[in-house]
Amino acid sequence: MRQLNHYFGLLLQAVALLGCLLLFAMMLMICGDVMLRFMRWPSLPWANEVSEYSLYAATFLAAPLLLRQGKHVRLDLLLRALPSKAGWMMEWLVDLVGLGVCAMLTMASLRILLASNASGSVVLKTLSFPEWWLLAPIPITFFLLAVEFIFRMYRLAIGPRELRDEAISAA
Image (cartoon, rainbow, N blue to C red):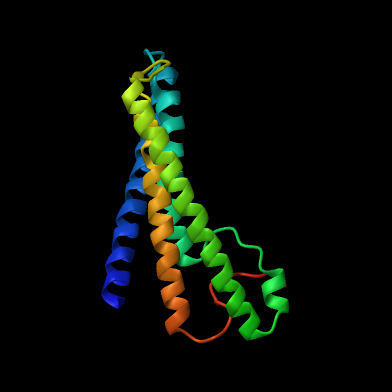
């Protein structure tokens, strides 16, 4: 299980790197578009649209690694006020709820993705492409998040019986 945990972490790093590369490409594209306008050459009419899609995809691609590293949004005031063992048990509860929610969202978004593909829905803006391309990151991300919640519970089981130290608290 430790080896699976390690390799899954590497997979999440690769997925997040893809998100970073998308952001880098988006930055280059926006800079190029601004330069073209500055030089009074024709701009890239599709640049804003591609930027929107890139930002959306990068957000989904980075989420599983952020969860793994404990850099997600987390309200831990109550957890910090509880005794160590009770905080640890709350971590379990939250991870179980997270797993359930992510599993349900994986299945629901996969059904929507398949329905979109079957219906042949198309996005018609400056660019035209199948709608399922926009939907594809959603079930993938929620599946990766669900698996990460399983690994979080594994790490809780083999670690000390106390609140995770990944959280940054204002308390």
